[in-house]
Image (cartoon, rainbow, N blue to C red; front, side, top):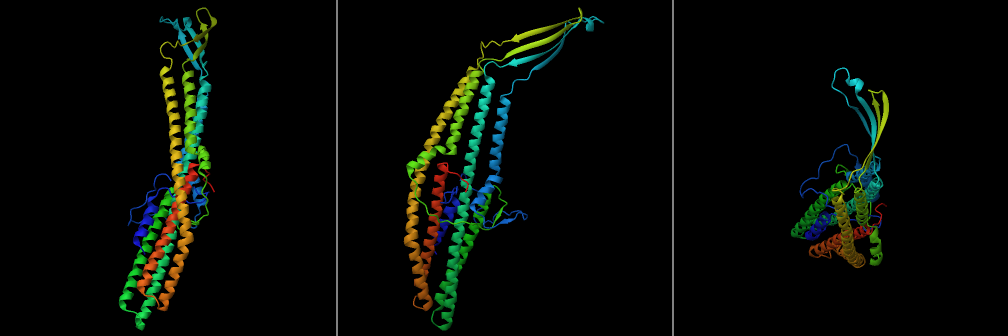
Length: 440
């Protein structure tokens, strides 16, 4: 086996933070932490049940139910809803109790003082409460869309980790076949050496090849365990023990039309969240303008005049005069934030169009490569290997002929697995960019 090919496959797989698969219902943000090579994966708690035959649908369901990032964004939505409810409440009245005109002379303070009790109401006349409610509603919309964008990002990350582990399972299978072939060759050559039909030097070479295959299998298995740990982390709980996965790398895909994908780009949750921020800033501009008109205060008091034993009432109104503070700074700040939000929408759309074109081009090339490998390489490699193995068992082929064929076969198999993983990456990128659903 060509060690460089395996190293390239495993390094590429583990080094890619976003590696979803080609299924339309599959759906990577920052790379997941992976222990350094040579170190054992982090131990998990013994009371956690091991997961076997974990499917992609089950993995995504775990993300929705258990990932702490989604729990945080759901809390943000609740907080925004609470702020919106609070913003629309009418100001509380103030209860006023006081004593007026109380003399200091002994014995006459209580009898000659005036007792006043009443309420002061603040009356918003500018529509500030309605504007504040609108700001709260727009903030809730933005938070909900941010939650959707975060959910899709976490689904993409989980798909990537799932595809990585599934690819390494396939790579381990290839290496297992290579080891089985090498072990079988050792047994055959040992029998020939005993019969005098082969020289010990050939047996040594075959044993070296078998040892190399065993070490490579152990290496791939170690990488697979690390990939499973990365998958558990992507699902939101690194203590999960995942033993095996259920799924297929291959899928019949057709390249979507770029024009159709570009039209669907408008449903991308990142773009929707950016547009929701514009609406939020527009509502804040209206609120800032409403605050230019101050609230009016209305006073209503009851008064008892002890000196004359009479009852009276006071009515007053307070009108602040906006001579200096007309919230001009607040309006300018809100308008600037609105302009910045509009600019971010344009920047986000430009980034998404660029990423879409890049992913579409990449997927087109990868689909062609996978098709060629599947139709022209895999079958031929299997035929060549079967032929040379049969000749070797019959004694018509030497070890020098067999070993290069085996290495070529392993290289082609590993290359095909890597190409499938790359297809999964590009396809998932397209799905996320165009706002496709992430649930099966």
